[in-house]
Image 1: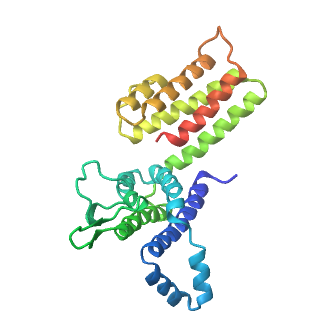
Image 2: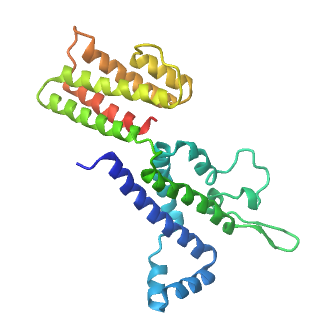
Image 3: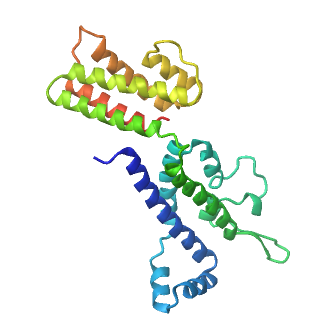
Length: 270
């Protein structure tokens, strides 16, 4: 079975390859003739150049999915650069005038252009988004070196592998009708993950915290939003049903919901 580390590397390589093609597609869109001439020079033959240009993705159709997937992997591997990555896409809420220095990819996707009315000259347009996307792509590419660097902390990735393995054991227990044991084991995974998330955010954790304590701590410090908080709250209740409530027996559906919910939390709450 492939590890989370190899999966991250494979996903990252694919995102970078798509990013390179999106960069070329953006340049083709903004400077069609100049870019076509450049590709002809690089590829030497007209046929190869035409094939390359024809097979480039449509930036406006492919960018959003690339952006969403890139955010997930940056949030996991390089969270300190996430705000920068988002900044190159989103319009600033404080922006009053659109100009070259604050033109972002969101403007490009909407085809925003500013011209001077008295002489119809271009003040800023889609070309200004090219360096913004280059910066996003550079942040994504910087993740590659983290896998090779001795300073790269693989603790989270290794831990994610262990959590996946423990949830697999919980599923196997449930398959053999050990619902309470399966739920209890899955609950331990949730608790350990929330503790690690709190530590990653340098939050003070009291001794022997319960899932509800950790859930409140993460919400209070804006690590989780209200939807995530409520989901974890529900999972905590299901865990307690399996581990502490001896009067009511958890159903198979209860434990299935618990395991699938925890699997989602460990992949989306960091």
